[in-house]
Length: 114
Image 1 (tube, rainbow, N blue to C red):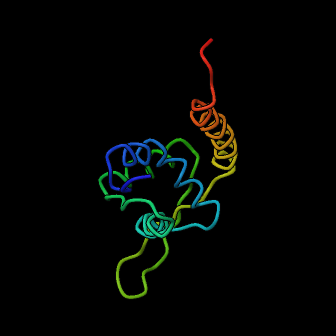
Image 2: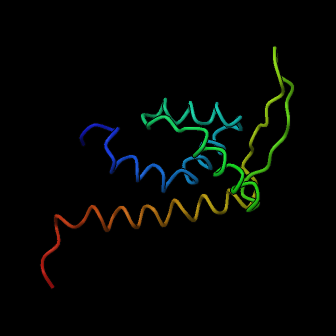
């Protein structure tokens, strides 16, 4: 695949960011920066706060994530995001739909004209 910083990959990452964040919350809760760092560890591009926090807020507003405040070790507290039961349901549905979509896209090299 080419350079992961190319525009196409970045666009796919932006579109799937809610799904990616729900997936990270399923593994373990985390504060915003921590969730973004875990995505980078998986090979994704860094996510800027201007893109990250509106998505996290929307997930929370939609009831797909909940949050708690935890005291900071040496600084201010952190808002920690958790996957809600509704978020777990949405994640399962989105994974299924994404898998179907990826199969369609991946099958184009094997298709013949109708």
